Amino acid sequence: MINKKLIQLNEKTFGWDTSIEKPDNENLVILCHGWRSGPAKLKQLALFFRKHNFAVFRLNLSTTFGAVSTIMKQSEKQLTKIKFGQDYKKVHFVGHSFGGIITKIILNEYKFANSDKFITIGTPWDSTPSAKKIESKIDFGEDPALFGNGIKLLKIAKAKKMKNRKIKVGLIAGDKPYKEKQDIGEPYDGTVPTASALALTENVIDRKIFHLNHSELINSLDVGNSLLKFFKSGRF
Image 1 (cartoon, rainbow, N blue to C red):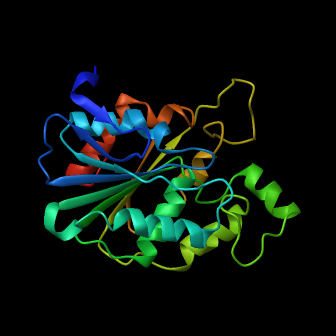
Image 2 (cartoon, one colour; image 1 turned 90 degrees about the horizontal axis):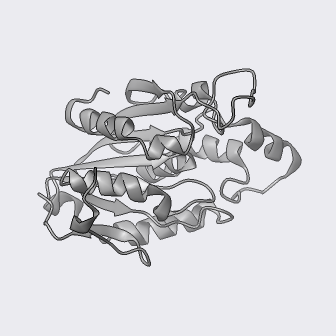
């Protein structure tokens, strides 16, 4: 059970999650939320990491209709607050849903000192049925509206390799739909097909499936413990 009295979260500006007790400054976790979401969705995950004495930074991005160029500018502005090479021995990145794709684009463009692990949770690396339907109906141009054109965004994320070629990547997927009668002909978490969440290959060293839906994945103690294990050993 998380002792919330030890946690002080700035819910207006997000960014740094601080507590009464100073973190050890050896490990920093950067969290990136998904589409139609925000830092608040990752609150429990942030609390979990703070409980384990990690410094935590939650990106706050315009992830509904913002263009990729806008997201990059927002990310750069927020991440420049962090002294990667000075304050932390290891920096880990965690992206939920489409936040994993955005994190990959960020890691393609910037090389962060001491970046060590990158984990995606329920990220559609091979798109989703709903994104493919939107793709077939709308043309968003060369700089597509974020999440409005999933296939183009995936191409942007996969077009380059991450600047840190040694960063270790882990993939987490769910296989539990929101309702028992939801059926798309293959296992999925109610939003993202399980196989899609495990489809990335670059620098991937481990994958794990949980019997959880898309939202439960970021509020699960079992998932949290698996993230900690991956940070320490590179395996789930």
